[in-house]
Length: 142
Image (cartoon, rainbow, N blue to C red; front, side):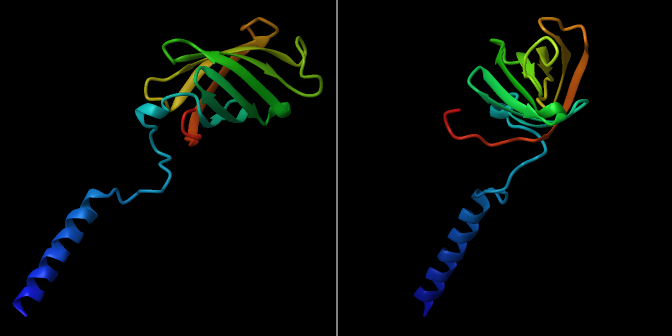
């Protein structure tokens, strides 16, 4: 009987030990702060032009936004903090009336951006700002 008690005690000890080593949020999304790996432009953003969803793969950023069924595509700077985008909107998706350029700078904590946009090659039209709503998990290797 004593051996059974020792085995049970060892089993309980192992369960407690192993249980405390697992993160209780395993498998759940963390919408609060992006990890250092996710301090990029990938995510859902609430912007002054409405909802924006971006995906960064390497140095390329693509995305869509609600205003006039907008689309963006661009390249991230070497330091990872700035993206230079071309944007386009319905109906023609062509500059100068329905397309142009934007440049967005990611905040140090990765939870907001600020920048400028304009028609054609200009950045003179106005501000484009956003706050991260949600980090999007992309497939590994992206």
